[in-house]
Amino acid sequence: MVIKSVNLETVCGVTSEIPENPYYEVAFAGKSNVGKSSLINGLMNRKALARTSSQPGKTQTINFYNVNDAMYLVDLPGYGYANASVEIKAKWGKMIENYLHTSQMLKAVFLLIDIRHDPSENDELMYSWMVSQGFAPIIIATKLDKIPRTKVKQHIEAIRRGLNVEPGTIILPFSAETKQGRDEIWELIDSLVLPEEVLQEMETAKAQSGSSKTQGTSGKDGSSAVAGKDADGNNAAGNGAKGSQEAPAKKARWKSTGKPVAKKTLKQQAKKKSKNNPSGKKRK
Ligand SMILES: Nc1nc2c(ncn2[C@@H]2O[C@H](COP(=O)(O)OP(=O)(O)OP(=O)(O)O)[C@@H](O)[C@H]2O)c(=O)[nH]1
Ligand SMILES: [Mg+2]
Image 1 (cartoon, rainbow, N blue to C red):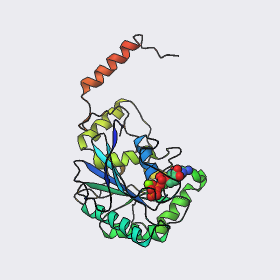
Image 2 (image 1 turned 60 degrees about the vertical axis):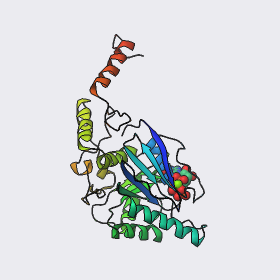
Image 3 (image 1 turned 30 degrees about the vertical axis):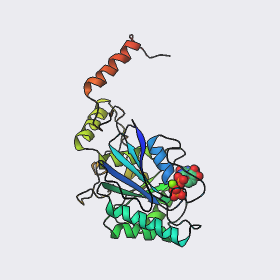
Image 4 (image 1 turned 120 degrees about the vertical axis):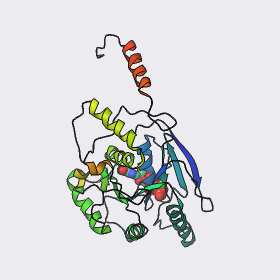
């Protein structure tokens, strides 16, 4: 997804009603401090639109970030925050549960696990609860920059074993520091939320740009590519299943309706570019 606009559109507290949004949502769950808000900032190319903190328990509401008037990234409060009172923990748990049950537009749930550590009991409980509710959570292993490259595979396998994930579950490593993994996550989200014709336009643009590199999401950790469920309950592997794992085409542009900008506009942009640099030569 090429980011054109982002906006914190709705903030839900314990007593708020879950909004009936016009676009698909993807939600990010995980224990406090695992990096949910940092990941959302990374995806949106923003430093601090989603508030982060080294202290756990920063996000205490459900925050809906409208991206390109085309979809929402949903930041959930973290669980397992040791300092929260039993009452508060129960409230946050209820909020998350209520959201996951109520939202009609939720397309996929990402469950974040710190790549450095084996999943906690709370992580295991959350994962198996989500599966029991009919979700197929996609796992993101966060804080990738904190372990040596040579250990990544081993840590991903530890998460796979620790959560006892369903066969075919995707586990994508990500670092909010280096943004490694960002393109793969966006590609997966695109495949889940964008209409088929837009995805095809992106494919075409990519083919036209002459890019021939292919980098498998599955290649990162050796997992096969099966993603979350779509609104009809089907497995939505999207591009993952097709084995096409390149970064989204840079040429795709968005206007506020969430539809790609007409070709005319792209042509106009090209014209403007050649006007600014009539010789067409690269500047030194
Ligand atoms: N090195 C490194 N630090 C990270 C990464 N992601 C998050 N952090 C740090 O981890 C801390 C927690 O990040 P947040 O994004 O606030 O975590 P959260 O899951 O939203 O936490 P809650 O809102 O409490 O549930 C912050 O100090 C971040 O800077 C990462 O990929 N690498
Ligand atoms: Mg947060």
